[in-house]
Length: 508
Image (cartoon, rainbow, N blue to C red; front, side, top):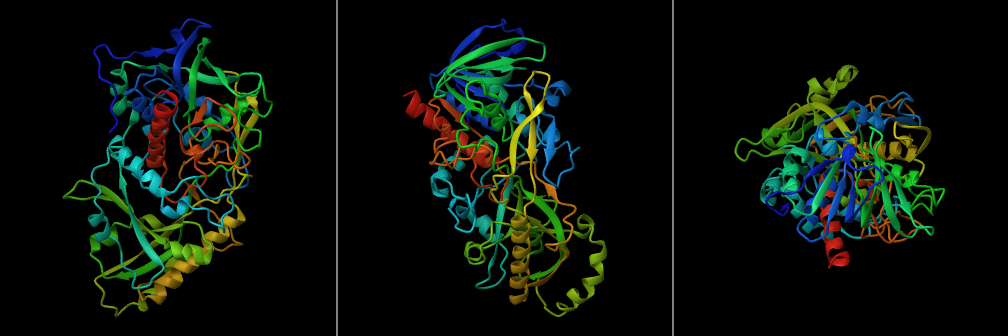
């Protein structure tokens, strides 16, 4: 459980604007970023003896001027050049993007950690079983109640023996706002100091780029100072982690940790869209079928909010060489089906005499596991922000391989549903047609990917930047692959794991 050392007097939250200009602050650990990863890490480290500085760009509440530091440019073919994705998909104040996240939590599937031969650049340096204990420790941090396997198993949908379709169930956090929920715990800690309104603008390394000597912190009011630490952890989010490494180019022109030109590459987010209409007939209670529709509902007995997802089995993914794409059911009022209604008659007639317990007719959505692609990347713009730091430039596109995988997944799903006599699917999504109405999930993943080989990853299995002795990265930027589920639970689990590593290997 996330607990910070309790002590009378506690720790101040300091205003970075009031720190003496040019002051050098020395600590054992410097954490850059006060979101889910940074706050989890700070609280986990507060149980030890290390002196910790947490640098947070924002204040306790949002500020338009601070949020504007996120503005940047986008390119790549799908998002328009004027898109505000970079500034609206994340929040820059204490608690980070947990200040507006929906709260959906799920564990990555075991297959997500595997090196899948049909997915280039896939594979984590450890398996799901290794991460399971950290997932358990992450649950109370995210205020997730008990989630007993029998209940989850009971609510799986049965698509028939030998079927290639299965279901998973995920749980919602309240959602946890890390600032209000865990801020008081940090204030009570005796060894953690939080600097608000302080922006890390540069990591300064030694001449050989093997060791970080200090981080420069600047405020919008014009103040600046340095923090020197034994260990540094970037926890500023999947975009800013890469941006700061690239912008710290005083010693190495390509930035820190970028000898293989990997920093910022492999940017991923979860695409999703409504793809057609489905008519499903299942031997299941109406409430269990409703679990797989939108919006999610609260269980009257347990108080838990859960949501189901329909996926292809691991064996099916391997057989058809597919990523871990998932499907959801949309009520007619949510789906906006329109022209598809013309095809409804034939679909429904096929099932007019099934006699099954629960019928469902509505829209069908697909969520894509994005394929790792080095051309989708974060780089630096020629434009600078109010602090003089280069703004972010994002090149991001839905690749042809993503589209092919989506179409093939839908074909397999439709075939299996029909073969099992459990339903029919009418798909209106063609490989060569316009892919309009695609939406994204604001999950920023992959830009400092984890791999034991420095030629294939930015950080190693312990999240330490290759070639830099005292710099680590926390957050979804280290994910080699995105999987299907929302990333926050895994972000917190990895932050706990990193804290354990720092305590045992660095500060023991």
